[in-house]
Image 1 (cartoon, rainbow, N blue to C red):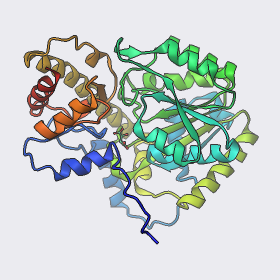
Image 2 (cartoon, helix red, strand yellow; image 1 turned 90 degrees about the horizontal axis):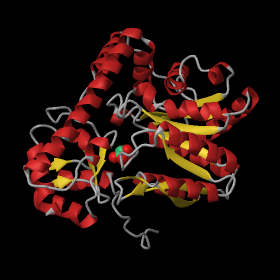
Image 3 (cartoon, rainbow, N blue to C red; image 1 turned 180 degrees about the vertical axis):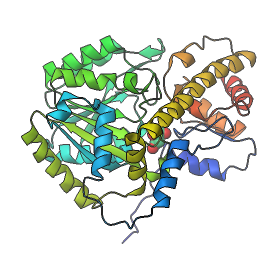
Length: 397
Ligand code: LMR
């Protein structure tokens, strides 16, 4: 039966973890996967999460099946965070939200639903994009192409190229957009540029799918979610996937969501019924614990305030590490302009290093980043910074 099965390639991001774990270099540093580590190099257990878990443990409950679309209070909390608790489209019941298995799960539910709705649509992702976008939409049965995004010479965004590509796209084309903290480049559109993108998407009849996995890691919760308001104001139907992996440091709990903005309450009810079929036929219904924790934190004022404070702490530490990385690289003898590192937002720095240089970082120095040149600055700390800077300087010479 399996004689003809070929060995699949390692996942470009998660596969690095396997390689990292097998590496015997005692000085190894993992800047591959997008995970926040604290100043001691430890994965944090947020205080708000620990307190919510303590409250749950103090009153343990049996766990029956959740509804197919998840915990109602969780879905409501997701909506409040993404659209604003006093949003008019929420009051008008124009948003279908389902709990999902991480942000990836939200993307997949949306992709499977879109495949049923519009099987021949083309999907456009940014060039470059999160490695799994192409794979996920391809596996959902779509042809996936890319719109220009990164401008290497400018160390920024090829905005004209992006706009031209979207203007040339056929009606019905699904456009995957990074709501904030673009993965992998770290370069985000300005609100004025987003206005133009929204207008183009609307004029061309495209289907926007916003991936918002890093809300709160760029400028702040509201600022990072501002683009959602621009899409709401446009009156367009659109998709938003949400992840709490990073913002709650709950990676292994797989807590995410998918929200679909529809034109009317009637359409919303029908869309929700279809999303539930997608979920039921994939994994039946979602798990309880992580979503319960997030729902409790977001809906309890004191815990919510604590979460916002802890999230701000992560955001500010990442920013400080960007400044420190530039200083350390300069100290290590790198003379090129490194100001792009502090212009980028979120967990990643698109270093501009080639795949060959990234492989040298791994094999010669035990410093793991993605072959695209992406490094996770959220995993830097005062201790590993000199190692990383020396290694990067060596391959940049
Ligand atoms: C990443 O880009 O490293 C994260 O989103 C983790 C993942 O699933 O790839």
